[in-house]
Length: 209
Image (cartoon, rainbow, N blue to C red; front, side, top):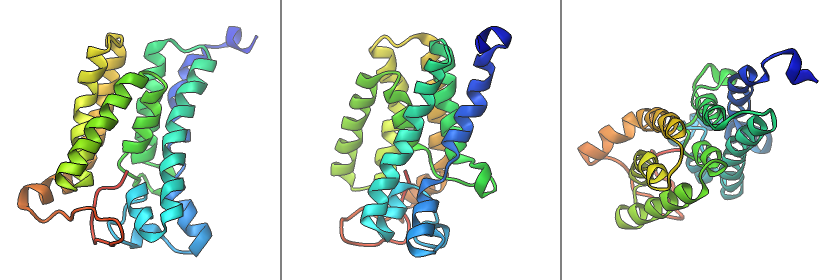
């Protein structure tokens, strides 16, 4: 009945943004250690930086950040959104994570959230993206390079798997936001000063998911 009173679809971007803006990495470190993750390592609230602080918290951050992206799209579908609206929900969740209102619009880099969001839209494209992520990571040991490459190629995989054009367009926008958020990592990669990811070490900087 509520859907007949107003266009519920127009609430999708706002709800998705608010879901995406929940800073799980920040909250987990704050509640478990009473510290601000933004003062540690790369200063990012994403899973990679949280993982350096606490392995368990890092894994939980990864799952929760991906989960909120997935949930935003599922909620949009429940509200009756079309494929285009679902894609809008995915990008809004990414934007919420990257520009979270709760931390003065300074958040994470959106990789995990984007992965979860588009998993609900195109599972095969996301799985192919994860394979590329792992290949680049194993080859270079740069999480930042892996994240950038995987994100940049996602719209192509979506196209090859016959995902609707509007979804691909929104996916391209989401990819642009994520890659743009990695601008510092890109500069470090080009200058050869980016730190490689090695389990058991705590480098000063690295890409955050």
